[in-house]
Length: 213
Image 1: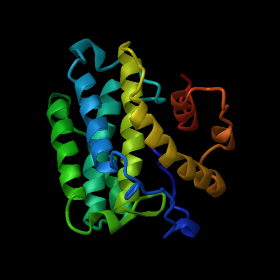
Image 2: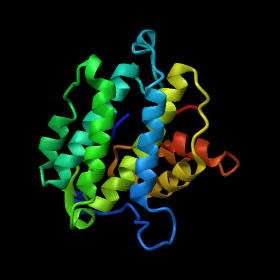
Image 3: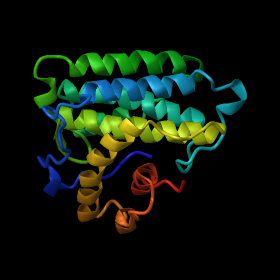
């Protein structure tokens, strides 16, 4: 489920997702590439009778979920090229025909990573509809979205829903400040932050992003 909200004026220019550049670990680009690969691998197993199955995202079936992942990749490319927040939000309402979804997912994921590799892309200011963020922060948001939406797809299709620990760890680091700022702005429920340290990191990530594992 996306963070589709009216963009608070007070948050314009607020940049909050921590970067992992220079930390000596698998870099964010590689992690997003891996998250894409794992999502696409599961997507390749979806059968014709599974597209209309419900997902953990309210009101979304499998087709809606995959469409969101695809158009988000397209929208993030547009953000990196300098589109406005309103243009991005409008792009997120587009729909890809079912018979093109699998091919479009691989194509747009790759196109997004190529856009991120353009000179200056990681430092570019992107006008996301929640608040402004750098290209590096946008890439972090994509990581958390792709990782959790992979869980949505796994759960919807009845597959093993254990996520890659590396992706969960980085996604958790990225999404905590996003959710805290969202609570402060009033568009993320306060109880999203009520995570129990006794839970696994995967469960904490899922719950802070509104899932009920």
